[in-house]
Image (cartoon, rainbow over all chains, first blue to last red; front, side):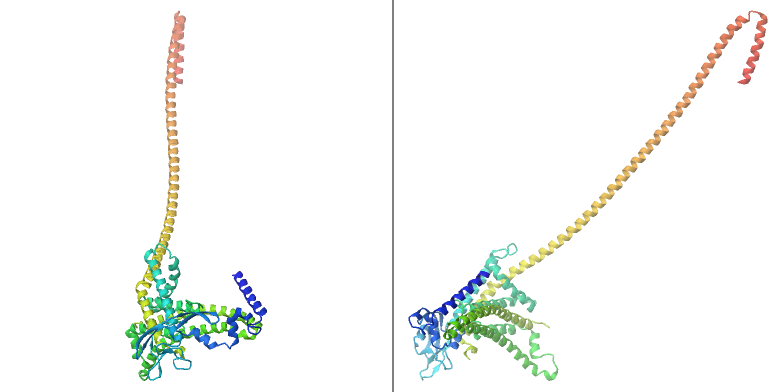
Length: 363
Length: 168
């Protein structure tokens, strides 16, 4: 650990020294700037901070993996699946969109109400949004993480099928997954009561899904990096699952509390309104809490990392020292974000289990 | 604004994929794991309970054993004491008997000796008497050669006999 810290500070000092010795590219002459053209080019024009940040936290039709400099980049073009009102279903690569459009489909320009999304030009010349089921960056990330979760859990289950759990302690993947699974299973037992076995699979699934995607979101390179749990559609679906389970399996007592609570007569007409509102606000709060936490975490980390590029035009000393600050803060925020990833997954699951427990009360 | 507007596409994909993965895992994944782990923790609980019970039984058993040992020791002590008492008693009895026997023998011997002594005395007396009679005969024969002498002697003897008869 000590050695790792030493190496880290050594590397930082080398970066600082290099930045201080080399005159910034473009200021001296063009040829010497070739080696560090990426940041130097970025430093030349004003950096598009909102563009970078929203590009990273938002969804996209292609997955931008990395820049190679001089305008070359590695990108994954994903399939666009749209259903036009006029011409029916279309499936094509998002490379066509980047090239400028395909069969009247194009990405809406800045300032349009559908900014960044696929739109089609209607025969009357107006722009409208077709039904868009494209496999976007988030959808691909969703697919990969779901597959990973599926494989991991089925492998764990296979371990338990093939071994006698009474005679052997779990090893490998089973030893890794068991505490996570049992933590939520126990939480379900505490919060729901006798028929918790019916609900624990959903709670475990929600917890592991959120946790896995939160962690994948922190990883900055390819298989990770998509901001799935920081996307309101994802958290909305999760919260709706909870909402449906809570209200579909609610007891008579639960519904009586909502529609005919035991209150003074003058409160009778008001209480159902309040109770229904509260029932609806529960999934909304679940949605917003997870979405906002994850989004905010990503934006924080991106901002701190972008300090390096913003400072590039203010000279080597400021770049180097702010680079140090930025890396140190970045590490801190990454650690914080890991903590938040776990906490948010746990909180979502715990609140879901509490809501289910409230709806399962018999008297 | 685009951040808080849910995308139809992602919503649909999310429902489909999450739903499918959930259905698969709720059937083949989580219940298998949780059931096995619960079975194991139940097994651990019963094992612990059994171990505790065994421990209690064992300690009770060792207490019982100690009590048994104590009891046996007491019994042994008792037995030893009894044995020594019996020995003492037998010895005393034997001693007593021996003493009685000895005194009996001694007294018998004494009476026998007494009887012997008496018979011996009687014999001696008889033989002394015979001897005296013989001696007297001879003396008398010698002395009584004359008449006068015979009469004197007879008178003297008669006196002696009567005095000795009175003494005896």
